[in-house]
Image (tube, rainbow, N blue to C red; front, side, top):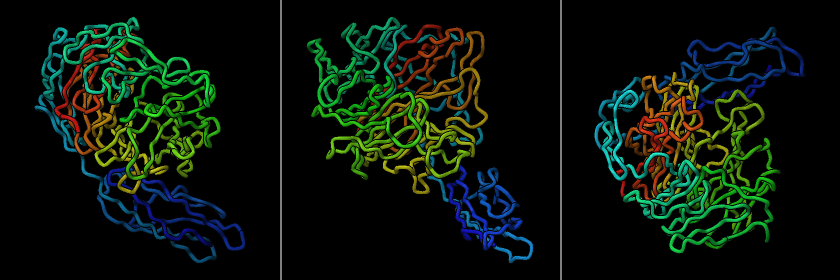
Length: 548
């Protein structure tokens, strides 16, 4: 009887996620059948086997006992598995388990406080807070248009810049103009207005725009939006629209173009989009008006299905020298592309990898029925070293939590492996540990990252509740949080004071803060209804950072 390999090494970061199991093959010489048994050495109760007996030929998986692995200190541990069968010599497989230290937790900072907060077990910060006079049933009243208040828990100044019934555009397509002069807003009736960030006064009313709009990265007075098959440029100085490129003609013939409504542009005026009918993913360099595309319909792996959105890296990655474009499908199976300046095309880098905690075949490829990478609410991020990341939450079973995480784009298919093991994923902070509320809409968060500063904003929400129910408090509920660099510092700025009322149905969507952050990282834009039905308005919050 032979068992191969005869050495197995399992590596994981301290605290999890639990490492992928290793596969062993058990064979009898000459291809015959042997009934075998497997026994784990007494000093290695952490070894888990998918089967402890069977007949050859066979394959089994060697992994870790979850509850033991979660709390194991960093270090190297050894054990062995003995395979025995009647009338043949026993075979031993040596197993080495290496637990590497986790990267340090971020520094948690506050403009003041935290006040009214406590630290639950398992959290490194004072994650559970009581919000004074939280409405309902409290009687907190927001200031009038143009007024401000200081957040009682974390100390940020919150300024109200619109009246009720006005929203800002999405987290990633930042509503603040290039140098923070204007904020793009839209009313509940669908009309778009540009307001002055300093005062909240409407500067330009009923402008032509849509939710796919994006500001120019340099010029405060210019924004763009797709319309039909064209990208349109709007100049506030003249009030005029002009067509940048129309894909009805030329080398790219598209019947419509879309962006998904939830994505921004790069720091240097590149913008991605997709042509659904033609199955093309593209990015447009607005500086040269040159378009780079790839056919995603013929991409290997699982079919994409309906596309949710596309998103550009903030710039060119300093390590790989590549500019990335991510295509996210509603079947949560993303594709990662890079710009090939030589061929004038997009190159497919890899498809969304298999989640390491999937019950699939653990080959790293996203196959049918497997749990795979799932960037629902995400944005791209660039650190001070010019490294490009994707930022979104990730739920793990061991440990059981939802964490804010970053994913280094230049790591390719290893993007979901822990950074401590040479992969691309860093778990920055625990947002919620199990058990956390999954009913009544559950918890959620949105991500927005600055184009020209190493800063992101994370805004969290609580489950739905009726106007007669008391507030549901749990760690990091209804907060505006910033992250500096790749998890170096986390700053909790303010409570959103926004409630998703069950009585409002679909309208409750707009009570989510969907916070966005300015190009320089100095300002956050967020929505809040302040605990009043149909009371959503736009707020502006200084982060305390002055930009890059």
